[in-house]
Image 1 (cartoon, one colour):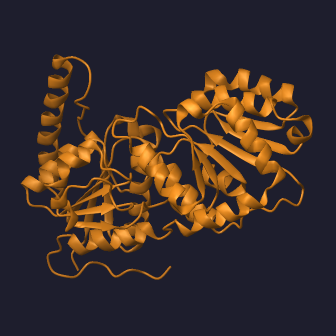
Image 2 (cartoon, rainbow, N blue to C red):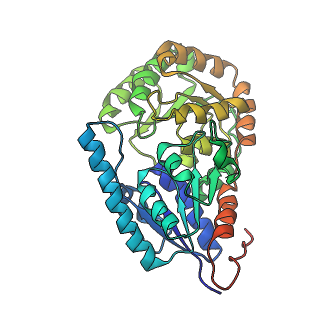
Image 3 (cartoon, rainbow, N blue to C red):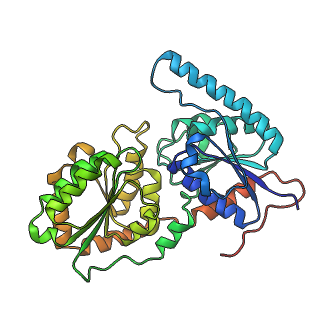
Length: 374
């Protein structure tokens, strides 16, 4: 049987690389070979990526700035496409899978030119600009959920697979929602790569404003920027609230599982993990997101009844303090919302996407590897 080689293309951020990593695990479990093509930012995340090789090509984002800056970015993408053509001619992959971000544009464009089968995955509720550029060029589009405002020309080749999650998220999803036997509310705060400062500004002040009896019944885990840690620690110390604070938690899925409530931005990975693990949330979409993708993501969880979505201008210490007091007094509301979140999750999205990828993969002499039992 000819080996199936899947070349995965993903921008070098966690939002792109985490679902790509989940697909890579699913494909390698079925006997396919996986290689990754990305940009230099992936060095922060890609060390443990389950690929037999990692390739870096030039890319840039042609938005904002001067006309010269945009022209320079387009030139970099052109050079990256030439590099990708050379790489694909050497590797001869069976299929190229893109996960969004402009670093995926050169390899997907090159694959389309060389008539190599292609699959494009969109993690958000609306399609990003790079993916919109690629949508007409690829063979199949995999969506995390029905895409808002999708072009009618894409619908026939779009399949809803869900957003793949890594094995540690699947493991965390097996943990039951924690009870309130000790009367404490365990709160997890995470702002994501683009929005941790507002969490440092709002959440400690909201907690300080709680009545003393409520402050005694709350525990905090907060992911925040390094420069904000001292003032956040001081605020919780004044409030007498136990808090664990760090700029990054490598075991974030497990911490989500141990939380009664998560306050967060609504990036695709965050929303997906909240649904798969099944935890209630207060979501504050990033207001200046390029395609308002975070608002679309948050709306998906709000529709399930598991998330409360708050516009950033309304996310004040007064609002959050009142909401926390209400939930501490009536925690049964959170138990119901946890069940609603779980109902919205697609835990086997990586397997569904692997089915799609292997279905379009170019094989010379035999069918794609069969799916192995879990």
